[in-house]
Image (cartoon, rainbow, N blue to C red; front, side, top):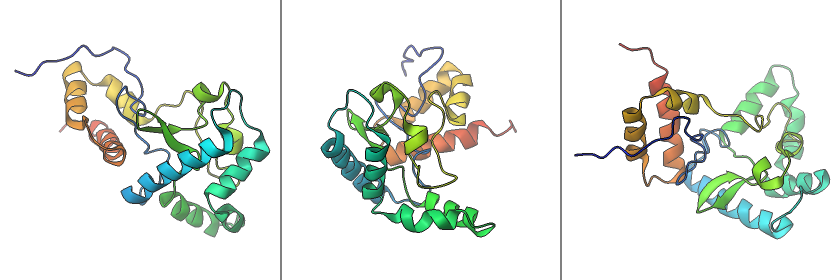
Amino acid sequence: MHHLEVIETNPTPLCQTRTQSCVACCRGKKQSDASLTAKLRRQTEQFQKSFGTPNHPPSFLTLILFELRTRRFSPLLLAPLFLLPGFGPLIRTWFANRTCCAFLGTVEDSRAGCLLHPTRMGSDVRRRTAFALLPGMACGEPGFTCNATHLYRRLGLRERQEFKDKTQGMAIAEYSRAVVALEVTASRPPA
């Protein structure tokens, strides 16, 4: 017999549960799992070297320099192309599908998350720094929750538990794909 654990009536967003993290909003769909893992490690190490554990938000200039260093200066080459009529959105989409946010890293307990999240920094600096050099790309509002989280919250207790059981122990990339699949599945009209 399967035991149903008590599940909160307004569960936390799927991006940061007690044991897992989803990065579907922060990484491109065509970025490989190996590339994501390498970037999480590299970006976390670079963030720690650059800022340590900041007790106040770093300056705009130091965050821009961090983004340039992390992205290996690619925004300087790509940003002007993003502004081209017609062609710009195509390049932006191509780039977005193959990269992740420069401020995505390992935050705690081997979970991925935003190194600049307001809960870590004390204020929201993401909207003026993350993707600052890439027109048309940006973070969501501090309280943003994805459609998958909204759909998950509307599921019954049994369906939520089944999702938790199915995704338990999944790696970050695999869990992120499961969250996206939940959104696709849960948003379909009943047959």
